[in-house]
Length: 100
Image (cartoon, rainbow, N blue to C red; front, side, top):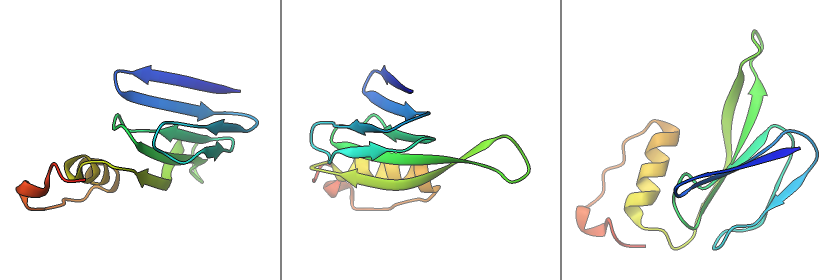
């Protein structure tokens, strides 16, 4: 069982049971396992797999980024995704923002 969602440029596939292959232009084919999510974070030619595991003391599922790939993506978009997912700050020369 899986769920596909799209909101604007954000695309995601959540897998609950079984196995599913996700194919998206400009990214490698990804095979999801149960409790995993594929997303593009709203950035074309970007793909990530997130695993959700239960915390030891609760029923809450904690996300863990398993893989992340960028193909022909502008530096500003790469930096934005990395900053949001790793709670870091990336400083780069602004003239490189549009470079791929």
